[in-house]
Length: 404
Image 1 (cartoon, rainbow, N blue to C red):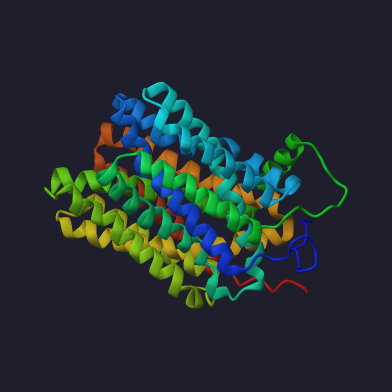
Image 2: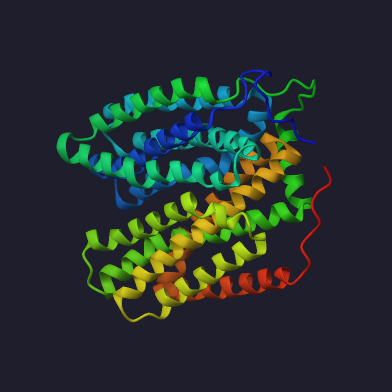
């Protein structure tokens, strides 16, 4: 059994929603600043294209390596302590980046930032999932939405504007200052310490417990598998739909980037305004609709013969992302109530990150050997299978409500 969600009387209390959402947006904004600035800075200091790619991908590597250990550390040390360590280390690294003037030291710094990334993202998401049972179901997507606003809109826009106006130093200084703001917010909204139950197994035992949960819990595997597949499709779309737009349909780079903006806007709209509808549906219904939208999007991108199909596909993907995100958030919150913060917190980041890596890297191999459209066609096949499975599950009787 997992530890209980803290009340206002045990060690710091349940986190206030507004503060937690503000913290999620600040963290997303910092990540958005780095997502734009780090690859550009690598190119500016003379890195080769493959080295720029390494700099851009090391954040994913950090989450893959430390997602499960971070969940175990949250159980042992608490969300606030883990967040503070990740933020302090990242703030110092951002202050030192202007003194790095060659590729390999920058790769080393990017690797260290990547290792610290899960320590400041997983605790925030974990605390929101722990708080969710106390909230209206219509708020299930608010944390993802707050993070998305910072990651995809505020952070990149501010980073690009600052680089154009004053270079990289102000961006790194702003990132460090924003981390200091996040540290102050965290002191108010993240729990101070884990429950003291007298049980303190070693780190490897805690990680083994997370892996054991995945092996024996079919619903956890199902939710993680859906996260993996959807994020794989998103990563492929973000990279290769832009390539199709520019090379095949002659769109400008700025116009092609608008595809990602359309995707993000629809995604946010579903997260903010769709939860009150999705909560009335069975999981099979919302997942099935998400897969139907993704199937249509993949077919449009793979078989479409006009730039308009990419715009429609971007909107369909945004809607599917929102439906899947709302449903998976609720499911992970239920799993957290049963198994505790540490066992579930790391798992929520592991599957989507792995999907993003496979979607970008594996998609590059498919695109090179079979053509860009072939990647969308393979995704369409996968979504057709998943849709059929969800429809089959939908025909089964709904499970009885859990006993109180």
